[in-house]
Length: 275
Length: 256
Image 1 (cartoon, rainbow over the protein chains, first blue to last red):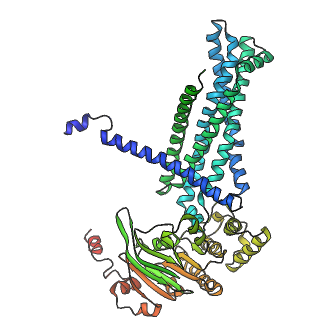
Image 2: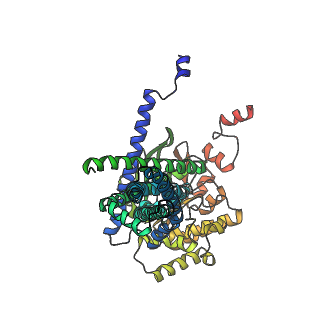
Image 3: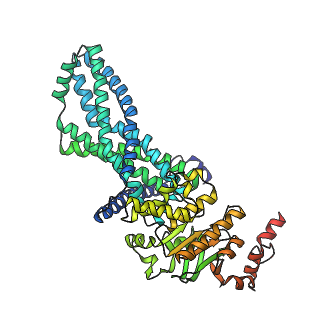
């Protein structure tokens, strides 16, 4: 029996069931968190009142959006540069380097722009939201808000979630522009594709549906990252260590969810709209 | 005004409250005493509906708190003020913003009306000069006073105070206690205070209750409490190590 214990390397069947149950419980909790936040916000609107302070929304928008522009722009610029350079040399062997502009533009608009932005925001803003709300939870500030009769979800979570939901597509666009711009520099410097010709090639290959796909994804990523970050923050238990644990868990969960959702989205999308 | 009937509450399979029954009369200042971890703060959270009991009923006026839906519960909470042990002021907002928060969020009052009320309440607690400071820039006693102003800003019918003088020096503790007495008398507010600070308890209370072993074991006026024959109450008031409260655990400590 003891030998069997020491030989075992992975989780047993009961542990797998427990992990699955925990996973499903967490998915359900985040789903109901989004529903309840929406419901609290809507109730407030139905009363003819603004659901949360405009100043709070703009403060979160600046944090999540404007302040993230340099990071998103720079990382996307470098990735666009690298992608154009590496794919360019391969395509040049077949004399098809004029495919580079379309390749980078489609890859970023449909996939890499939203995905990279999602991952960067989950790490940068998701962690900040969780730590901030978690500290408020530990200091009983959230309970004090609730005790006053103010809905903490609409007051604390809604402006953060809305800021991420609305600004995610904007940041994805920044990412796309930075990457395409970087690839245009590579095309000019290494593959003799002039800027006007580069733009023509991008316009020829990029479809409206590519742009719409990327934008829709970005909205969903923003909502998911915001909801996970706020949910994790508002459910912190166990003082400072709890804040640390939930912040780590928030980033890991948000990044995994964004990538998982992206995969499901792509599978569904390509099944319904092949090509 | 508040009724607790046979309330049971457990945390992590540990019974904290085992059949607590308690009445709070209008305009009285009830002080609930008990050891640390005996469930005093839990009673306040149950009255506010932050926690739901495992069994029993909690009533505030005509509302059965433990049966109310979220929306109705939020409306009822607006009639109750709460002062937390560590004040629980929003750390990112100034004193003025903290006190104005319930008015801005829950009333239709204009900016000038809100400013007037905030100034009034801050003056009542002697904090009008600190309105632009952040909670981090205040001392413990100042934070308590701001928390009191915030709790009173919606003119509640009931105010709940969790350890109002804990962690304060004796002089500031007396100031806070006197403030609680004068504000509740002026505004004719009912108050429920939980504390284990004896001086503070006897200063504030018009009636007292002792929570021990998950139950209210004695209720009465402060003078009756001082004369109590109950060995638990007598030991708690005297602060003696000999008596039923530490039975067993003290022997274990001595043996070590």
